[in-house]
Length: 65
Image (cartoon, rainbow, N blue to C red):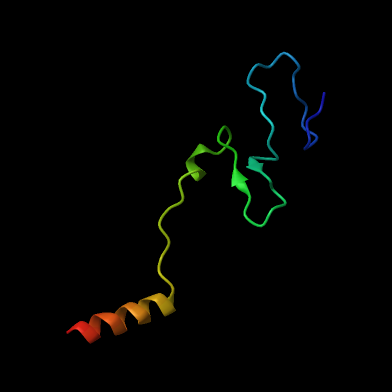
């Protein structure tokens, strides 16, 4: 039997899960990583601030000084 991606799936496998090459809702704007295939992607790392955020922080910081 084949899964949604065309990969062969053994009918006797107990750990079969539904994902599309490691992603859930792959066609959405922000696909979610599969917790079984890609558990390291579940936690999002902190993002770097944008230039606008840095400029706004600098202006606030200088106003207090």
